Length: 313
Ligand code: APR
Image (cartoon, rainbow, N blue to C red):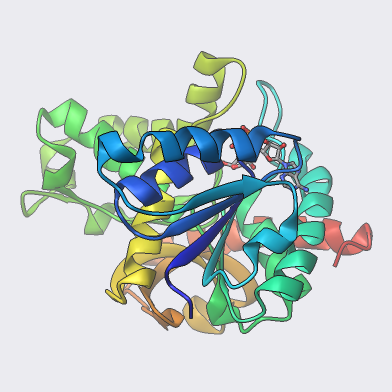
């Protein structure tokens, strides 16, 4: 894997911020590609001009031509339509599926040995589509959702208990959306179970706010969706891959029997390293959590079926 060059497809809010974080964290050279004339080139130029001030020494190139991504070790796909107020994730499905299919064709052509990190929503369905359309090993195609959902969950708990988000240990599994599965039993604040620190109804309120985390930001921003935390979450996963850290992170991965689920992408804990998904870790879940995970996966399956019906897979 060429870990010195990372392609970011889509130079919008999430893609542009990803590029910024990648160079500021000194992770790799960045290639930005966007269909909108001038956007990727402009952002690349702007980021390049910040180099001497920020002290990074990486190349940032941008354009509309997919041949620019040739030789990238990792391709991050953020291109697509962002959710607008009142729009469900599923509304985005067919439009984004067509965009993703086209992009994956170029990835196959120019970076056949790369690792693909999907960000475009509806996430788990788009990741399944990218896996099928690429023909890549499933270990090399995964999606970012759980890291973001977990970070949101930690933030809300920390805010309520007046601690730092880094003092909260948590893991959110399942599909990215209304059916995400926060693991109550694995949630601790400085080692103490959150269930002992918060009354049940308050914890449920925080879980609901986490589920609605993306929508809350959409309704505030009005003209777009979240990008600071999503780009942080992508870079956390990228960091583990590029530095072969094998960090255990929730990721949307292809399940082939793990957690009793087959032929589907869903968020579960996985070790991320230079070979992509190096291990899927099967945590001991409560009966209720396992049921919620299956329900979540069933929703992803419905989306995949819709793609099949529309001949997109
Ligand atoms: N190739 C390259 N870029 C494309 C293509 C394509 N085929 N189609 C659309 N784009 C670009 C758009 O031109 C736009 O600049 O994707 C970019 C998306 O950027 P934004 O609209 O700013 O959306 P953003 O907030 O970045 O969200 C992108 O990430 O979190 C998810 O739900 C979100 O699916 C959405 C994605």
